[in-house]
Length: 531
Image 1 (cartoon, rainbow, N blue to C red):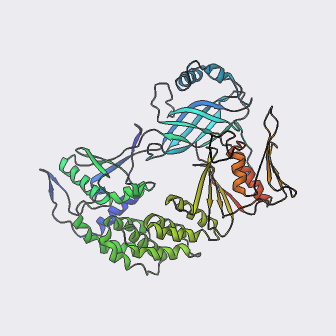
Image 2 (cartoon, rainbow, N blue to C red):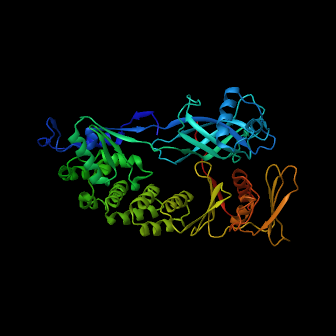
Image 3 (cartoon, rainbow, N blue to C red):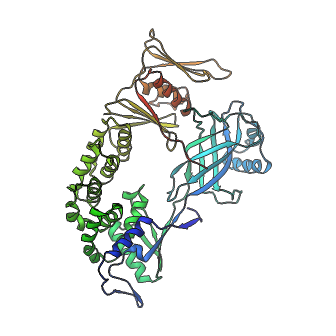
């Protein structure tokens, strides 16, 4: 993905290797690989290699934010203006007057910053920060839309620099909380899109072709035929198997603790089981046992009745991950135990390792929990397995509205980083009759007075008469009516709406909950962390 590459060793893996070596009997005579290379029969892949992975890459760019209704500025440094004119001419129809677009007070030039995550894959999304240029007369980016932009390595931005990601999307300005609002800056939630896959390299200490081939074959034997590819003596490229997407570090830890020669692993099981039962840092031995696989299952099962809760968690999770269903019931018990501090870990282990129907049943039951953190964690895992308990629709091409059935309490969750979404926990969340609410600037009004059969939603825009539409009292209908696009393609199943921005919508939803116009607890996710 980028020429910026770092060497990163996984601390846990190194500790595992050290622990294994420290408790092992003397190694057997080393088998020969090639003419000169000798490798210990008890060697792990981590002892013979180093992992090189791309680091998170700070990126930046410049672009226009449109739709500012006079709050923008024509001011722009000459070098930035020249770049934007050249870029926009490539993107827009011929003879477009790009200079006039930049000069309009309905647009503003902004600086974009963000961080491409480590291990990012092509088309992965990430958050961005946008800010009006210092010294310009731009007063607000509220309601703005970032037009297409190129993102390049921070500090190296130029016309000829390699483009690592693209950016676009609506500007999100956080209005939740008590902090002063700076309308000259905001976020583009999940607005960055990575252009290329990152590449993880496994570099072998001994540049020996046969050893390289042996390590590659062992990885593919353990993790699937496409996990590793030998590109030259001493170097292997790794591809994250589908099972471990989103759990890249776990995959790398397993890989490095995998024994090069399978027969050697059986000799380690007893000592690793002892460590899992007695050590404080159980993840080390758990990872090593999972790398061994199903051969460790019987000894792992002996720990399922341990008096130590953490030992039961580790043993059950490891069992499930190596394909033994005996780990499911102990994990289910932990997840349902309201006094356990390992509930979310158990829930995530069930989602990752259990059969889909088993995971679905347990996760749906946990939606009825009183603890919102458990409910939210269950929802997230249900999304990962594409469960029918979560119904998703896109609103205005700007955010998702998820309705989660089966929750015993009514909660509302809104994201402020990553994918923009509003989540309604409960089959039917309604607005109370008699409700009247409006945005801070009075441009958006919800009127549900008692003499009305439907809810009236009104939006006021400059220089045109107020727009009024009606919908039911169901909160999902109100959100759709307010935020759907005003113009839809012919034969669209959706109804036209008022184009209310996501940031305004979540602020109004919070207001409705605070006023008890909607009987649901409101929760907002964290803001992006961008330097």
